[in-house]
Every structure is written in structure tokens, then in C-alpha cells.
Length: 147
Image (cartoon, rainbow, N blue to C red; front, side):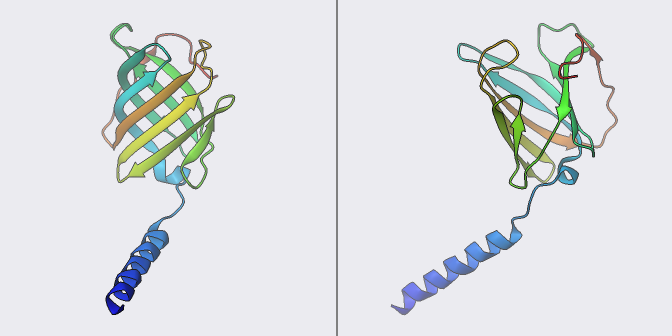
């Protein structure tokens, strides 16, 4: 009986510590330049590429997407504003939703779009790390999407 109480007390202390250490994610936490990989899953195919994501203090997010079919030195560019909830979730487009987690300098973003720009459902997964090194951002290959 005493042994069970000890385990219950340890579990309660551990759970309380986790709750106290959890805090809301803010824009200030995620501001920066992230370099990583992006996977976009459509109903019938998957597209993989590299990505640079820039998150500014006002919530503006600009994504530079690099795929094999884009000429060297150029990128598809999309931008918008991030309305981040304290739990890391955010709205994305019409009816879409996303979530992000930040572990030190590593950012993990998952976004689901019920119908993307091409009319197809899409799920995007980005994993990247924050960098403080200067980066030469590429030229947009097409007009900036989202503006």
C-alpha cells in the first residue's frame, strides 16, 4: 500500500513539473530564418523539396520553396501572416489548420489544406533548423503567392 502511494506521489510530481514547464508558444519564440525540408502530400502523389522559411516579428511568414523543376537560383515564394495560438496551432487558408512545435532551434510544422490552390487536398510537413548565418535569398520564379 505504501509502495503504491510512493509511485502515485512520484507520478503526480512529474506531471505537475511538466505542466509548470509547459508554456505558450509566441511569435517571438519562432522569429528567425529556418532551413529545412518540405514534404507536400496530395491525394495521388508526394512532392519533396528544400525550403527556407522566414518568420518576422509582426507574424509575416515567407516561404522559399526549391524543387527539382525550378531553375537554379530561383524559388517558388509564398507569404502570409501567422496567427499563432498558445498551443502552437494556427489557421491556414480557408478551412485549413496547422500546428508547429519548437524544440530549441528546431522547428516542425504540419499544415492541412482541405483544398489547396490547385483544388486538391494537401498536407504539408516542414522540418528545419534556425540559422543565424547570412543567407542570399533567391529570386521568385513566379509572382509571390499569397499577396
